[in-house]
Amino acid sequence: MPTDGPTEIARAILDGFDKHYRLFRAISAGAKERFERGDWAAVRQANRERIDMYDARVREAVAGLQRFPRASDEVLWPAIKQAYVGLLLEHQQPELAETFFNSVATRVLSRTYYTNAHIFWRPAVSTEHIESLCPTYKVYYPAERGLRGTLKSIFLDLQLLSSWEDLERDLHSLLKVVSELLPKPREVTPSLQVHVLSSLFYRNRSAYLVGRLDTGAAEFPFAVPIRKNSKGELYLDAVLAGQEQMGTLFSLARAYFMVDMEVPSAFVSFLKSIFPGKPSAELYIALGLQKQGKTLFYRDLFEHLRHSTDRFVIAPGVKGMVMVVFTLPSFPYVFKVIRDRFEPPKDVDRQKVMEQYQVVKYHDRVGRLADTLEYSDVALPRSRIEPSLMAELERLIPSQLELDGERLVIKHVYIERRMVPLDVWLQGADDEKFKRGLKEFGQAIRELAGANIFPGDLLLKNFGVTRSGRVVFYDYDELAEVTACTFRHLPTPRDDDEVMSSEPWFFVGATDIFPAELPTFLFNSAKARDLFLSMHGDLATPEFWKAKQEQLSRGVEDDVMPYPEARRFPHQHG
Image 1 (cartoon, rainbow, N blue to C red):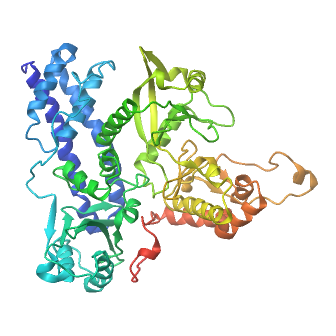
Image 2 (tube, rainbow, N blue to C red; image 1 turned 180 degrees about the vertical axis):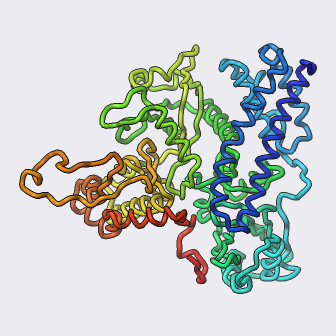
Image 3 (cartoon, one colour; image 1 turned 30 degrees about the vertical axis):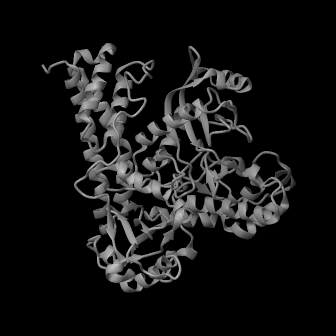
């Protein structure tokens, strides 16, 4: 039997984390080989597998602690934590290891242990200047070989095994954009440097080179998507320069990147130089480290509560039939809790809703599905909850509430970035804004369809508008696969009775959808319907959806780029 002391228990927990990160890094590093093979089905499968890895390793670690009878003794855990800190002093992923410790500890102990004595409520080990075997980024000096020669070296140094379609042609397009980033008179000076992260960022069918141009006086971030043509040859597709253009690439409405990182905090630090205003939590999540992102978000939330005085209130917009949604006005997120009971016509239950949210987590979100942070036992100060919201919570989700002194504990919560509901955004919009909103709305439906997603409840209130004006769907209880739906033409009435009938006079199956009804169902005004049909009329035909079904049945999903067509280099490959 192993020695039952704090150091041995701490060592066992850290061994569990080290196994987790070893497997996490292996599957992330394998993205290069999957990209080289063009095995897009394997790409999707690896994304799903990686999401499940963390919880599987935590369960293993918790089960492993049964070897230590004293591990269940709460009095011992401050000493276990102290021993764990000592093991992390030379560790390369200390912040992730601390989060893993918390996950294990909160499963072994009861929820009452929020204090820093038992878990890492605050970080204990610095992530500054952690040494790694391989530098996080490589530095190039254009003054030595010219800007074009430097760019060529950067891509050849990637050591991708596939041949290039025409690298010289692509460098010509790239050079024109990068040269514009240089301060006038566009000269290459000895102080000019190009910093490139050591790993490509893989997602879907693209690999992204991420770097920054350092002129000595300013830094200009950029990302270059690398893709493969039908022959398996490589080509550069575009260049995204600056925060605004790169922001859509790192949006959490898209799948997480696969990145080979020895020291994740160093990658996050580099990305913070590109996105200084973006929370570190979101950057960790974008890199596939969702649990670390959740830890940092929770710390950010309670740090914000310490320095603010406003109260949680019911979120603006039309109330949903499945979720109670509330927000803190000074904090840009919404909190969503599944109702205890659903009123007709909703025909789902709690388990089904939770499964739908998990489906979205696994799926490629193509920039059109909001990512969510899922929490258990969120403790909020009762004094910060508006009375009208408290009454709403007590009425609609009593099974999810528990009072713990001055805290209200909510047993299960989804948290998302706050957006303006599309119906609210369109109210009072001028003609140009209204047209832009409907165009984005239809494009969101179109891109979701290409990823085998039918939103189900297409009401405008279930779509939100991001800060960049992008329309995103966030109501998942009626999501369905396009391939599982039956898209039908409306039957022609045979007589006046059928014309005037308030109920369908023809059989409607559980999966039947009549696209021709969508414009009437969605829009009250003829003007809005006509405008939507002028831009997206094919969405109101079964033919569009059946063509998508045929394409998807062949295993072909649309490849939605995180940048507009206009930004692609002239040699487009589809």
